[in-house]
Figure 1 (cartoon, rainbow, N blue to C red):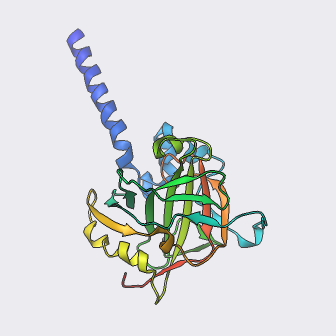
Figure 2 (cartoon, rainbow, N blue to C red; figure 1 turned 90 degrees about the vertical axis):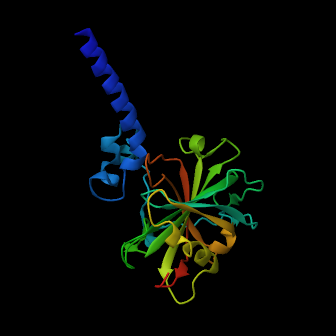
Figure 3 (cartoon, one colour; figure 1 turned 60 degrees about the horizontal axis):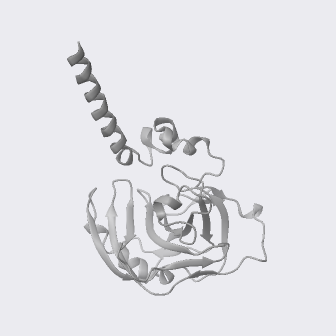
Length: 249
């Protein structure tokens, strides 16, 4: 009886480790593993269902308030290198860990300096729906989200994502057009190298500033990350003009 009990405990412990390790692979953006279920299945992600400042949102232009004291957003102009990953849920660009000169994001609605870390690419199965944020109910073909962490208060992204004003998210809406963004083209030209989960490819010398549309106007609000665990630690900045990509891209 004692031997049988020991075996059961060992099996449960192993199973528990496997379940914990699989959370990051389990979630998706649709179906029974989609956003509506994130907080129900994993208690550590309960903010996904119980949070009060969850992202993404539907931006309603007629309800926005103008703030004359908001400043222009600043992003360092030097280029960076990193790796594009297919995580199984999305494509994510992560800056090189040994980068000596990081890109800082500051000013605008931000009270601190944020260190750029990664880019999430969101797009749909067709050219009509792909963006996470909507504008007056309209979904853009795609959305690019630049993330950085508060380098003045926290040591890294993992620590900052749980804390107040820990993360900045810059949202770039992507629209179909004839004049594509040159910097975006550098990135999308590598997509055919990351077709499968777990694949990755290096991307060298891209400029975040050149990736942005030519505008100083934006909408900002305090929300959450749009992936588990939906921590309400993100200052969102949604630029008021899209960047363009061709249908072929």
